[in-house]
Length: 443
Ligand SMILES: [Ca+2]
Ligand SMILES: [Ca+2]
Ligand SMILES: [Ca+2]
Image 1 (tube, rainbow, N blue to C red):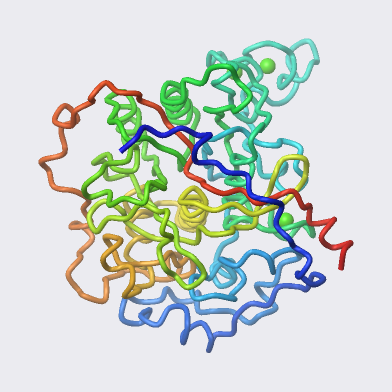
Image 2: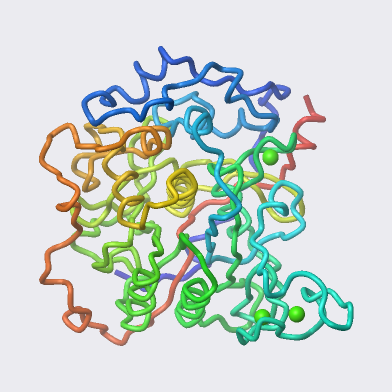
């Protein structure tokens, strides 16, 4: 297995033709009947639906984001849909839940996410000289970072979070584009606080991807993240990275990681950080509209936990634009969004309970049995609505919600061969360049 190289894996496809898309319509929520028939057939077998969370009428879950019809994982149009319309009848998220997106930065001015960016309270408001703490050039909260109001750029070591790739903006949009604002799309969590931590920049002369990833995790640990979304990875074990995520666990942080796009079985060929043996990690693979794992995606009956939409996913791009990308990166962001909803809806839940809700309430799909540990596709509504969940096979009690054999527990047992140790993005295709506005005008 060759070491990853970003450039090799990121092919800029020709601009996708969006001409066939019609004018926008308000999104229609699936009816209760459709839902029980097509989306969550096992729900009654799985557990008890929490009183008051039965699917609501359509009008209760309609939102005003005009481009949701392009968002196939969330508009009720496919077998792989994650039922967000129903989930939003229970919770639309909360600004109190901070999701750290460790990626290529973000367009902080994108109108569809700027209101959902985390604001560091220690770098917000006026200083004693009446200047804005966000821009006064002073480390007001003394955390070692100057003007880190939305996060930090670990490549350039400054507060400029500009996304020179598009990946980070796309991922952040899947997690938490602002819902019901009349613009573009909604993230899985319509309301949330996105902390932006930049570990890679294609324009930089040198990227210490792994080092910057570790620093990003440490920042998230220190600054109050509940969830870390990491849509990247590499083939080499790193003790420092392992320790950073172990510290996340001690802080109660759920770490959602891409299974990777090496077309390989992760039970045999590891991909990190998804494959570290830590119980705060969820490893996510990508499925298409037919709920089949993408050929490019890593899989593993033991190592990969859950599947989520990951092909031709419509989300935000820098410059206020929108477009599609493919990969386990995108799938990972769907899971992080659901985790944000579950945390928001259950104040007392710790990372273990949130992880359990997400994994055990996934929709069992035959084709995923050989590819994922829980044989399941993400279901946001079930993760919110079902309690005391037990899987259809009845074998998996909560305390047995385990990951790998204890033999792998000791990081020292996993060798670092010393070959190139990097972290790369887990998206393989970008097919972008059309803004929603432009698409609309063509129709
Ligand atoms: Ca600071
Ligand atoms: Ca400041
Ligand atoms: Ca929106």
